[in-house]
Structures are given as C-alpha cells and as structure tokens.
Length: 122
Image (tube, rainbow, N blue to C red; front, side, top):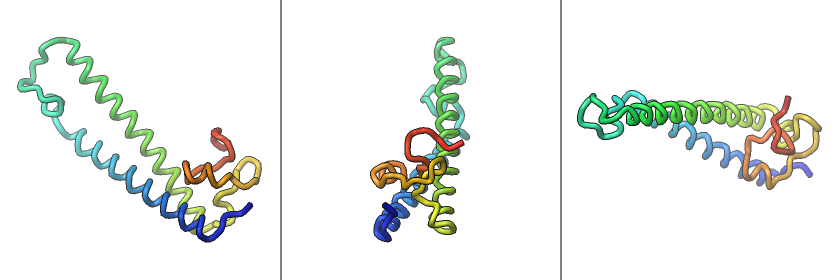
C-alpha cells in the first residue's frame, strides 16, 4: 500500500531528525579529533604510564574513526532518501530490488531504507 501524505510527512521529519543527529555526531568527532590524545584521556604528561595505555589510546582513536566512517555512510543514505522524497517521491518507500512497497514499520525504524529486507540494494 502506498504511503499516505501524513506518513510521508512523518518520515520526512524522521529523516531530518536523524540527519541532525548524525551531523552533530560527526561535528563532535571532528572537534575531539583535534584534541591531543593526552588531553582527551586526562593524562597529565605526554609520557604514558604503560605501553598498554598507548595501545588503549590507539584503539580508542581507531574506534572513533570507524564510528565516524559509519556515520558518514549513514549521512549519505539519509541525504539520498531525502533526495528521493523531494525529487522522485514515487521511488521513496519502494524496494529498489523488487519494486514492492517497503513496509511502513520498516521505514519508521530506518526511514532511509532502500529495500524491503535488511540487505542493501545492489
């Protein structure tokens, strides 16, 4: 069943909220990545107390970078969903693989979904 105008408006609002959340997370990462590692974790000196501290700091930076990469990818998906919603509304909410309507419950959870199931489109 195609989306109603009210459902489309609600999903547009969800996309805009999710976009704001992701942009905020990316801005926080950018601000925090400019902080010296010893300042970020509260160390008082540049000399680590133990080699494990260096490993922990490196692991945390890699994790943060990985999360930022995932958020960037999600932002691209959200922007693409908004583009479809505004410029090709007949394609928003339709599975890119099968052409079937994406269930509203799925769009409510992941408003940028492009397929009916959890797999991404080819």
